[in-house]
Length: 391
Image (cartoon, rainbow, N blue to C red; front, side, top):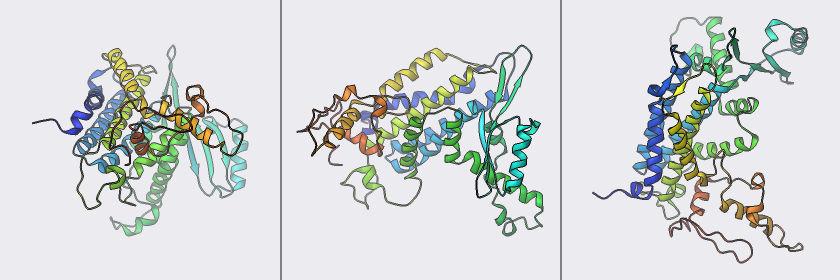
């Protein structure tokens, strides 16, 4: 039986994806902690395996041309990759409190300035006009005599403490069990609500990435582009057949193979897996240390995979020549009606000045089109396809 188009057209990308997913699922057997077993390391292995399962399920959907559901599964995969980076390195976090009077806040600020014990972990505190107080706090850190600092991220505790099925306090009277709700249960519900909004929602994850200096503003803008794209398939607000299968897609037709949707899926799966593995390698260098068996070979593999997929222009990548040409031509066309000057050489534009794209799938299809500009720079695709345009 001949291979499917998915297998034949993306053989190298599929190989990369399966290899990295296998590396994630096998992390538990590759972590060497020495004579002492640490709970953090067991948690790291569990998280890696959970992401491998998520990516494997999404890969099965993509292999069956179900790109919408596959992209839908990739959004929590991206969220986990971000969460796990905070789990390992999030030494600072934000906590919010509601209905704090100005008098109370002034007292807290005075106590902090006086060196109160409770305020030792407070990096920054501010109160808004609506009574919401925002505290930026340090995580837990311990030092044993003659050893390195061991910092435990607040996200390690949130992972254990958050209960997603706890309803809002206002809904408690209408849900089982029917015994009288006391103030402790209401307080617990409020704590869970505040925990989610302060630290676990996507805006909170991104904010905590920034305050922990785990991502630059440029990185965050790129991450949010991909989060928005994947979110489009989570929310049933429109039909995505045209985006996923091209302009000729019939809304009543069944799913079918599409080169570009399948390629973008594989690029995401590969880069999310690589991002996660890089997190664990960085974590291994912090106390308590651990070693990943055959780590040197895996690092080499990750570097090769990232080089092969750099045209996605993901976090850590340089802009592709396509994007540089787009930027050069945009600047040139903006001068219409003014004194004309020759267009800038795309290769001489600073990488930080090349504007990022908005639609990952549309851009990927454009990478497969050779363009011939009458006024400006043309782009010669390395992978031209006749079905890339119009799409």
